[in-house]
Amino acid sequence: MPRPAPQAVLRRLASTFTQRPSPPKSHLHAPLPSKSFPQGYVLTGLHAGVKKKAGVPDVAVILSTVQDRKTAAAACFTRNAFKAAPVLVSDEILTKNGGYASAVVVNSGCANAVTGKQGMEDAWAMVKATDALLPTKEDQPQTLVMSTGVIGQNLPISKILSGISAAQASLGSDFASWELAAKAFMTTDTFPKLRSRVFKIKGVEYRMAGMDKGAGMIHPDMGPASTFSSAPRQLHATLLGCIMTDAAVSPRSLQNALTYAVDRSFNSISVDGDMSTNDSIYVLANGAAAPSAAVIDEQTDPEAYEAFKTELTDFAADLAKLVVRDGEGATKFVTVTVKGAPSYGDAHRVASRISTSALVKTALYGEDANWGRILAATGSVPFSAPTPTSAAPVIDPSKVSVTLVPADGSAPLPVLVNGEPEKVDEVRAKEIMVQEDFELLVDLKMGEEQATYWTCDFSYEYVSINGDYRS
Image (cartoon, rainbow, N blue to C red; front, side):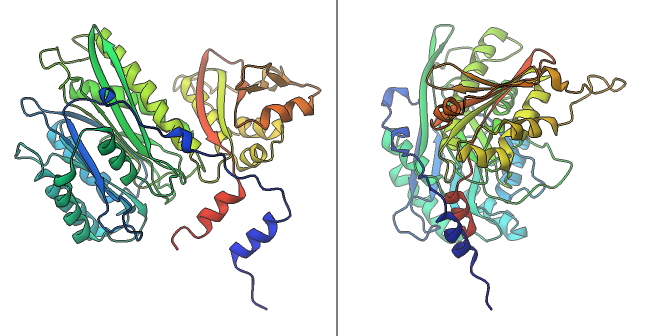
């Protein structure tokens, strides 16, 4: 007797439960004022034919037009052992150029990952084609490249190269141009993720804008150029992000600021616990806002650097949260805060473990205050020894507290206090967990450090989307 198809089994199981659709996402994307975009950039998005549906943007081109100074660039790449061709190529370009690059080219619909020699040749071809659009020609390649989509398939490179050449005709700097570029990043995303802001450092006004993509296969672990993981990770799709600013920042300080920001933003989100072969975040800083202003550098002006680092971290967190809110099939946006840890790294690892627990995430979807699952995830994380000769700290279960914190400002609900279970008001717990946004707060009472993760629930829709992703 033939076995039913997985999708048929899923539909049969789902029909026995009350399904809840994902909340609408349209309010998360709206026009942005032109004055909020950084100066000295032109960009566009267009349909080159990578995606099957006609008219859907699948190639984006971003150029810095500043000619009297180099544009600083920084990146954080996936630590996956199976790094995609665009990751390897961009890493090489940044390393050889000493932290300078003037353009970014992106394609969606095909990840160009695990594609061997042909994949590398295709990524370099995208770099060369985009370099040709820059107003100033340099001896070294100036374009960073990104790709996202299905793994293990070769790019339709002739279509992409034609699209890059055609992009010159539609390059612009208004909201419509930024929006087109953001749309070209999208795969299973339901809306373009685009943000901008204006900020001041020492009286000088600067602007920052950026876009990212991601809705599934999201659990980034990214580091600066030329860093490698010690073990292979799972093969899945991609989180991509690109941030542009018209501040002048030294390459060294731009990289350090981005590394700090990514750890507290993109490396602190999870949709499903799977890390990509392509995850990449780029930042360009062209100095167009104030050509005569001093270059921001952590050694020559620590105060200006700290201000810039704070702005970049806050902005990166805003973009990262959009990815979680657009998680495939997600109905909840949940903040996981772990406080009272002996180190930031320990707090971050515990928050990550809670955020990726399938049992926790299904309970979030079921709006079930099953705090025992939170404790089980918390207790499974080994802590780091503070020195090579000292013992690693161990959780004292008699001191741990867990609280449900509503986002509407109403009273929190403790479910575990100093290791003792509370008599939980199930009605109140349901009132909190039925909300789209709320927080899980875990207090370890082991130290002064804390970390935050942003995650979502697992729903039937998530399984449906990923059960036949390639087809």
